[in-house]
Length: 248
Image 1: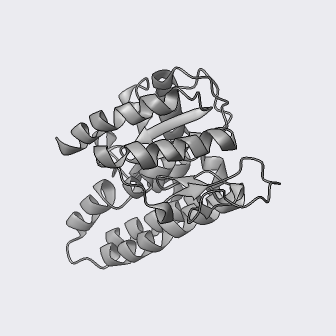
Image 2 (image 1 turned 135 degrees about the vertical axis):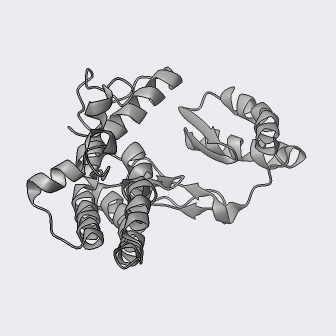
Image 3 (image 1 turned 45 degrees about the horizontal axis):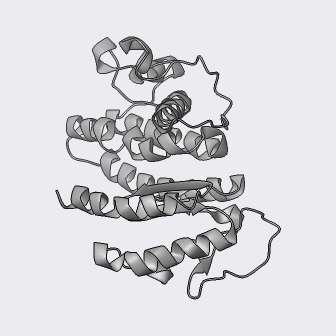
């Protein structure tokens, strides 16, 4: 219950900051993101620094970041010991929010190296049935779920294709035989429909992102731009019939 109690205690700070009318304020536990004019953010800093310790929130400037939303601004950070992060390299809670190049590089470094190492071990695992089970439920597309849910696929499609190729190669290595295009399409169908349950990011990524985007939009009661150009009437995971979830 500790995290819940911490959030309840932090709520008083969140409410106090809200009275300043920042353009944006969102928190996940003790990770907060606030957008507003410079003077307002300095007041927010004073609130957190003054009132936070009594509630268990002690600021660590070395773990805080400051960014100018105007990428042409070259002014230094007005708070000592707080890192100035370029607009093109902003990221929050492991989600890259900067330029397309930064996003692609970030996802590639976080996703592909570990996937390759684990895939090699699964391909050489002594029990093929166990290896396939682990690939399907723990080390396949599940490893990419975080980025599929939070980052438009258009920004890291190249890495998604590379990831899918790694999973296909691993599947064929475990089965000890290559698969034709049609055979692999069948393998990517749910086990309930005669497949192996191997899923591809390029198929599920757009729907996974839109599902999270749509639910977050509904919960926040805000107005957002659809950055990934997904039609407003596109189906989400919650709306698709079961057999449509696994293959598009």
